[in-house]
Image (cartoon, rainbow, N blue to C red):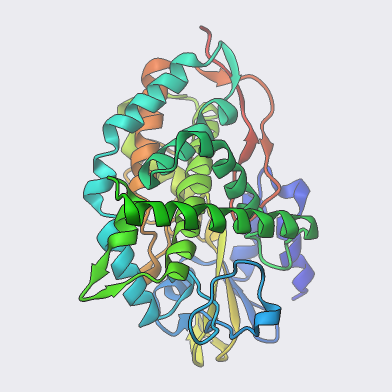
Length: 395
């Protein structure tokens, strides 16, 4: 098997619809050896195993000499890089996730419902007869929501979105990364860290009713988040709470407008629409794990230390997960859009809530919405989303 055939799956010309290529690859190679200690997984059962099995995890954090550190790169007292809990193994993962979950509660998310409804209605009602759905709704709504949740001042939110976008562009794995994305991402992270260090200091002096204040104050049996842990957690929340929800909205509206029933299912059963969009055109297309010990995956021996790339977008259309076609009326089925196991997305309830409200309100307020041109996709692969989505409402 030629590894270049795998890399070709992500060619720019395939970006508008990579799924036929994913299907042909998955049917031949549900588990594929790409190189020594490098594998790709596209079958649903095999991908689920990688995400759930403790035999697969993440490399241990690196020890960095001070001369090798990037400006403002958080390190712990021993010199190890501080990473978000999403990139850690137990017990470090368990400790950090428990602390963050104590601050980022389901109740806090549910209390956002009236405000999300208010912002959504305002953005839809202000939209002209013809507009770009990404600029007018899919991008501003999630950044407003995550900014309000964290307690970001109104004047900072435009910069907040710019930093998020720059960092998200650098999330692709090395074989997909564009060199020109690295420097803007580093600068954005530095700006973000400096900005939130100041905000965190302010919240310590004057706590508010927001997630940042809760994270600053959270403790568990005397355990608290260090400053570095707080800053990398905020970075994770920024990208996961903004970019992925933007893509959920854009991908979902495009799929609905290409479906014969249009937005009717969105008004009638937005919960089902959200789950079908997550399965059919997942905002997160791939992730990776490291084999922590020798193990078997679909009959293929995976040596310890191997990198395993999980093609979420391909696995979610495995026949055992659901059909190739988009069916917004189907009962919610299985998908891997939020991961599985101990790393299941902590922000899934917020993403689902925003998606439900947006799809419902679009279906009710703009039932005749239609495509008004060809959409354009962003240049990233790990996070799959639209740059533009021209629509017309018939206002």
